[in-house]
Image (cartoon, rainbow over all chains, first blue to last red; front, side):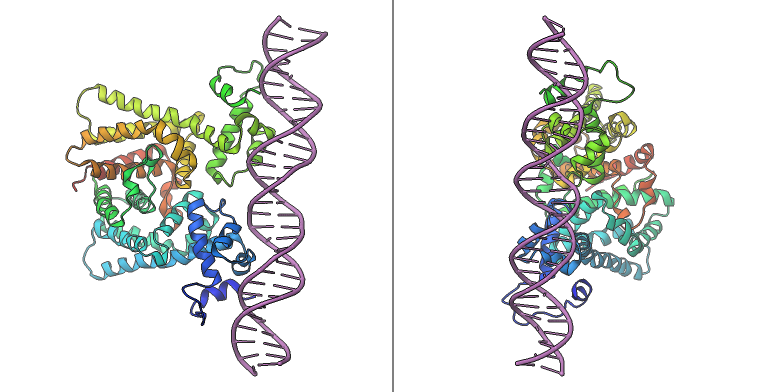
Length: 228
Length: 228
DNA sequence: GTAAGTTTCAAACGCTTGTTCTAAAGTCAT
DNA sequence: ATGACTTTAGAACAAGCGTTTGAAACTTAC
């Protein structure tokens, strides 16, 4: 068997005589699983739901990915890398200019990849942000293990960038503000609206990404730069 | 059988000869279920996990609550009412003074009950905020049905209060800002730290409620009142 | 003490879950 | 076309799930 590693490392091999637009088995599983994990959560999504909607055999999941846990990991890893890379690329471009960065520029450098993701169905659209949101509160093993070491550079880069952009604050204050700022930005794109617990909020139902950004940036920047 | 309704409506009947500090069966189930639902989520928490830790028979859940779904509803409803009532009481007190309210006062009127909850283990401590957080992203049936009509007064009161406190903004802007504000306040108390996806954040590990408030209020108030 | 009502208990129910197995089908270089 | 390899297929597995049952234990009132 060849399965996971080879499959993911060689996505170049497009099948020659494909009817139309029907991705290979592993990709179809990933796409369906991503959507169902977001909709119902990891535990409430069964392999049979996934394989039926993906129109593949039940055993295909274990053949291509090894286990349900490993499938989840693959679903997550497919998106996280490009997303983090996009954020870091934004930071690179900003820092290359040489001049001092503002908090607003840093905020936008994170929001722009979120926005691009939300608008690109080929990369799962807003699904990935929602998946991260679910995975975060579900406290999945994967996050505490694999991601911590692989992508800690993300937090390090933003932390030092914010420390330079907001020199009037100490390291601890910066940490708190970043915590709040990323919290609200993240939940905004994930569509998590606390108020919809109490009443069907009209804010989150009209989820135009550009509208989100327009309202989000002033709020976050003001929170970040407010005097203590 | 007597079960759910009677049980919940007559919590006065304290058993006469209780050994010590061991609540009755239904309460023990609620306490354990609340904690496990928060830790593992609804789907990943089995009735056997609950009944074993609560040291009650497996059938006790269905006897006292009817079903696993109904148990979840009972767990949630035990906390939501008093919490909303506390927030509204804060609003009442503020509005009774007659003078115009500031955004900061409104923010504090929500934060104070959150803080009180976080510090009171008898009421589940921070568990309930985390439960609401999980339930929100898990998009549970209960939220869309029972709560919307019962507690929509919560959003209505805060909306009109914020409209009076921030008369320079239109209704739609207010809605967005409240969406962001409650998002960040809520996640702060729930301990959801997006950054901990990437690196074990020191902010959220030191989860002193008073510290949260101290940093949270300036951030939220600045975001709410920032010019558009 | 008896009878009615309430709660606990162990056992079992039918069903779904993730996973495994073996054979069949498909693919591809030689 | 043969042989090696990869992928798909259907069936079965043990384990765990929420729920139900009926009898035992307990409580309460007369």
